[in-house]
Amino acid sequence: MNITIASGGVLETSFLPFQLNVLQRVFADYNFKVCISPKAEEFVSRISLKGITKNEVYTEDSKFQNNSSSPNHLFFSNSDLLIVYPASPRIIVEAAIGNITCPVTRVIAFTDKSKILFAPTIHPQLNQKIYQSHIENLKKIGCSFLSHELYPDNNYLYDIIDYLNSNYKSKNKKTTQELIKKIKKL
Image 1 (cartoon, one colour):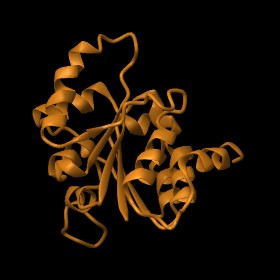
Image 2 (cartoon, rainbow, N blue to C red):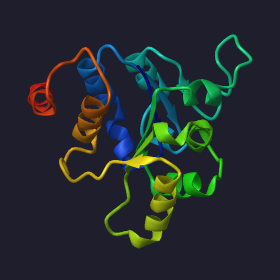
Image 3 (spheres, rainbow, N blue to C red):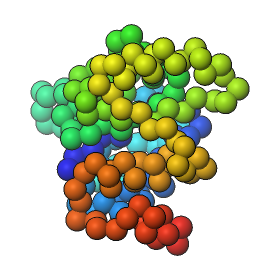
Image 4 (tube, rainbow, N blue to C red):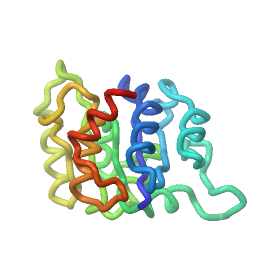
């Protein structure tokens, strides 16, 4: 299974290397790729992401696959699942209105909407109602959203594991709760 994780630039992006490392351990039979917005590069390095995933990272200055004329956005949008985490307010709004401004919004635009899972990261002091219509529009065209209700204190890691465990087959045969216990020991 090929999974692309597309990250916008908010503080939660700094957790991405740890979370990718955990996801790779839990779902060892999955192939993870990452694309990041220019703002995300302020919080995480492409070298660390490449070291964890063993795949090139799609950034604003890497438009094509190595030794190929194939654009990166087509390669990264051709995954079994696109997880947009963290999905910042900017990413949500731009995806909903079709505005392409960075690798993340470009990959979202070219991905089958039924294969997109958003993990929204909207600061609690922001007026949530402003973004609700954009979230509803994305849902109407087939995108899915994590609610963050089951595991509110984990930056979506357990929610993503639960989603993958519930919706995709893996060689991993453990329940989400068993996996969480294992992760807490890491």
